[in-house]
Length: 212
Image (cartoon, rainbow, N blue to C red):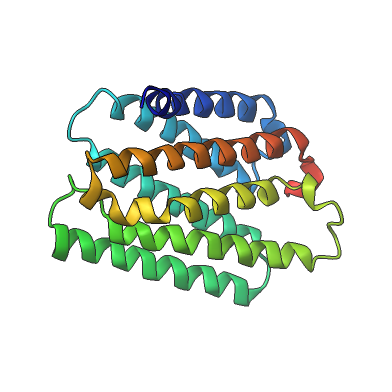
């Protein structure tokens, strides 16, 4: 259990390091759609810090999850070119935002309980958006070095994180403060490390001409 606790508590330092690397290499992508991810990472760092010292903090994680989905949706919407791909992202975003508000207003009826079903749907929708973008990237004749594209690495990281954490997201209110939660939360921490590792690789390895 001590190892699990240390693993979970170290996530904030990994986020901070990712933000630092993102700032150092920001000239490669700032002013492009993937640049919005740095804003989200800073917000995430603040939520992780204050969430650890504030009790009854589910509302903070609701805001964080909502902001993440909004930013990620905008990134992919402005990064894909075809009208069909943009429409798919709009439909996915519309379904998820509707589900979130329905759960908030009709099911939980409080902002201080994590909206597990709405954000569980988000954890399914984000990988679909990633696949839409990766499919377009694979069929692009302009970009031959996909591993030089920041959004390529972001897509891989987001898919790993959200697919691994889908069970945790959906069940969090039912298993909170149980042994099962600690196990699933450790999986969430491991998948976070993998996601941020992908982000860091993208910040360092990507090239400006491929991020526009």
